[in-house]
Amino acid sequence: MDFVLCVEDYSRSKPHPEPYLAGMKLFGAKKSECLVVEDSERGLNAAFNADIECAVVANEFTATHDFSKASYRLKNLKELVVLLDTLSLK
Image 1 (cartoon, helix red, strand yellow):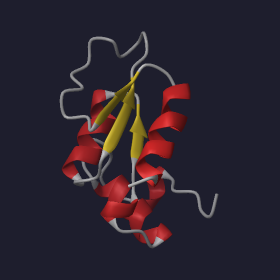
Image 2 (cartoon, rainbow, N blue to C red):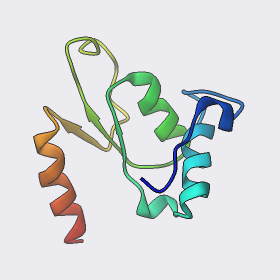
Image 3 (cartoon, rainbow, N blue to C red):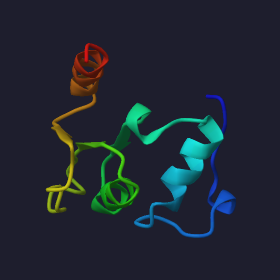
């Protein structure tokens, strides 16, 4: 990790986009270089509101959440490796 972003580093929490925008700024990244990995509707909405692609990994606690805004839906984290390989080929 190049940095740690804590709740004290931004004024608005998810689903506001500020946490992701602050992280991008610290990392020096463009939106097109980012992929958010989330497991909740609140986190997905933050990524969506920041206009950053988001891969959602559902779990038993978030099975009823609305993930319709997700760029990618994954069944487990193992699928993330495949997705990242696919995205790196583009």
